[in-house]
Image (cartoon, rainbow, N blue to C red; front, side, top):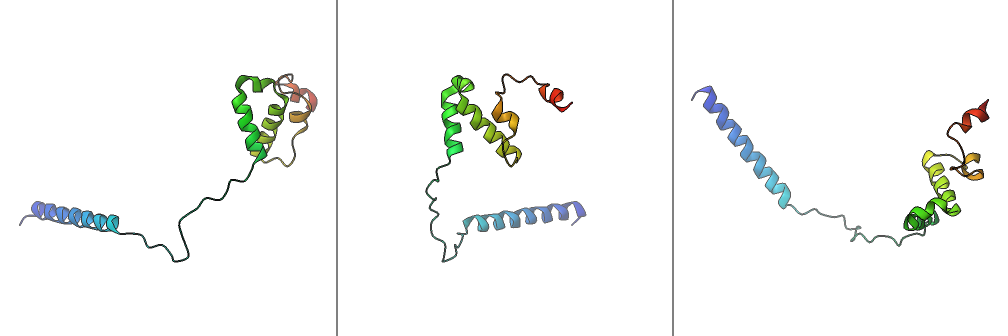
Length: 108
């Protein structure tokens, strides 16, 4: 038997063993520990920020003019950025009236 034929036989045997192992693994049923039962999701906990953001989402374009939505968006932004308390600029002055370079003039 020459080397090329031997390599092909080895490759076929390897593929056959891999397919058999895969079939065995897929047919196996997972044993769950005795303490675990079926997973029952916990009752949803009310989340006021999320509920308010959903309300703003339903409002659509009108939410842009809603003061409550502006406050919720500021709180969500601060939460996302990891700020401890809301920044002064996000709650004291509407974002639409601030110019993009207003922060530069305040810092001088």
